[in-house]
Image 1 (tube, helix red, strand yellow):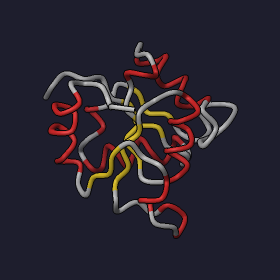
Image 2 (tube, helix red, strand yellow; image 1 turned 180 degrees about the vertical axis):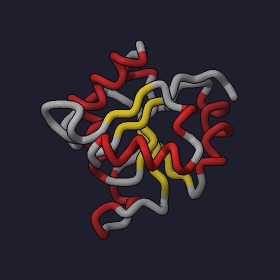
Image 3 (cartoon, rainbow, N blue to C red; image 1 turned 135 degrees about the vertical axis):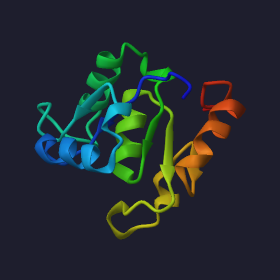
Length: 124
């Protein structure tokens, strides 16, 4: 609703990601969908996130990674992106709270208020 460009970046194969987003009725929100097989390396390597930023035309420091695991936090840190993690993330059996996020949310519905509070930028 805010007109922010969105991309989906997952380590799952792209062939599975796109149909899932379509089935959920949310595929139209994403300008790009990248899977674990879209780039030479997967998260937590920063390459996929840096390429996603490039595809969106957005500087990493102004691109928020919203994820659910330490892989997402590690990729974001290495790429220079702020990171928000969802508390319900699977995080390989470890508490996601220990992954080093800039912010934690219980639900995506909290993201607009977080963006407003940060003035569009995540405080480091």
